[in-house]
Length: 435
Image (cartoon, rainbow, N blue to C red; front, top):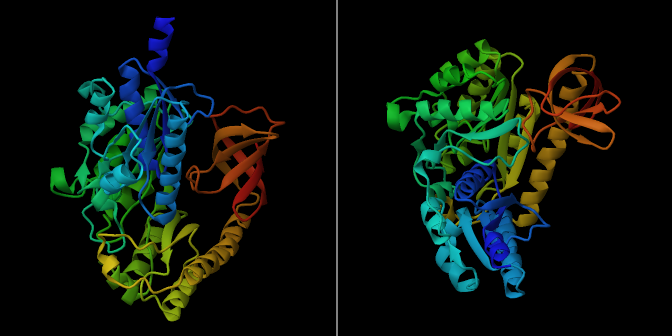
């Protein structure tokens, strides 16, 4: 009986909130726990684990609220005796540790984003240096988020990420190539490169931007078939990356580059280090150098002092540019950021209305793009089976955020396989096809 209880004590359920960078961090944490003989589950509603670790997000108001609600939920579960220990880590905990301790005191301990060794020590586990980069994947086994750097040196006025994640630190190229080989051995076929600022990669350790060199090295890893780029910064974009992209079939014709706005006055206040014309020129250059590329961008509606004219300018630019993929946030007034000194003067309803207007515009653009694909045959990676369909993605689509391709399950397919699919039907954000 005692043995069973002690075994059960080594069970942990990890809850992840927020972005792909948090997913990566949870996977590293879970890899360390497993190496210390813990039984680990991820977001398992039926778990009988006595220990819960919540990896929080502190990015914007909605994300913070979701993290706080999750902490409260598990604090209550602890009070009821359903779990024994609750630990909180991640961005919200990094940013608001004193306030959280005061407001929700019955959490066992709060940890920041760079305190993994301390978290493990609290759980009587060793931080195993030799495991750096090894993780317990929470994604389907055929794709993995691949973090190439941590933190950010950019001065964007609205962003609290440098407060929560610190300055930019690149992971050495040799180590990244070793990690990619290890993932390929596990069956990973797609690497989704993530960083707060992908295009800054290497400046700190190699004294120049070397993302292009990293891509060339990753392309040589056997078993990896797709390499996808997320979170590129427009200012100082390294053009040699486009040359590699155009030549290397393994690199998806896809670029996630948050542009945030187009009005010169808003861009200046946001401290983005660029202008409307330079932004337009960059998008045109990317499309010219990598024909057929899908550009995903993210925008902000309702930034302080954003006038109706600023918004209309952004809407017109979205119509003209016809981004293949686009998302938009409403501005969130974050403490200790440069923009917090400004007056958050756009009412919440107006912010939401502007965001909805942009998405209405984008919906039409997305349908236009998708209709052009009818009759074409595309390479599709099968992610999962749901009901009567196998669901996959093209190289132009990232998991969770982009379009999907539905294929009738009358065709026998396997997840993690690449198949050639002829597109027969197009909706705003989805495609239907036959093998």
